[in-house]
Length: 150
Image 1: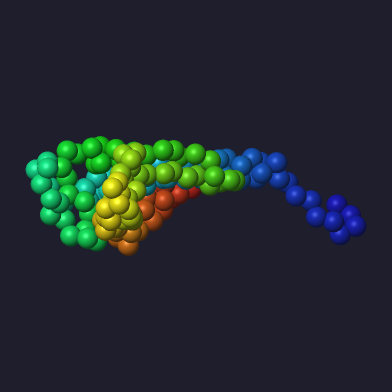
Image 2: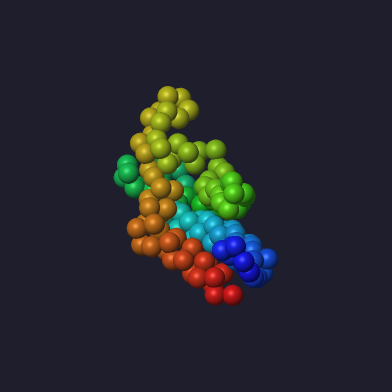
């Protein structure tokens, strides 16, 4: 080669390998997002199982504590939606209740007949415990490690 230029051999192969790695990491990210969402679902359901009381009796859970289990409807309503694409290389999943009263239990507010319900959070504390304990980070790290090992 003359003229001081650089010749790169194998560039097409390098590009193909990088694309394969990118696809593998993308799949791993989707899988880790799904797994993390199901971890959150289980943690929320566990939080909704910490106390219970018979139907038609006042709730024994204190404001700031998760709502007590009565019929199990709220706990059964915890669902995972996704993962769905959320931009290039990103995935999103939603986890939470489908019961109509799920939000007011979590955040508090005015219920029917003007009754004020105090917050009885159960979604955010469950999620925060997973994050603080490192479970979500470990899920992604393991998925990416496996993707990069191939």
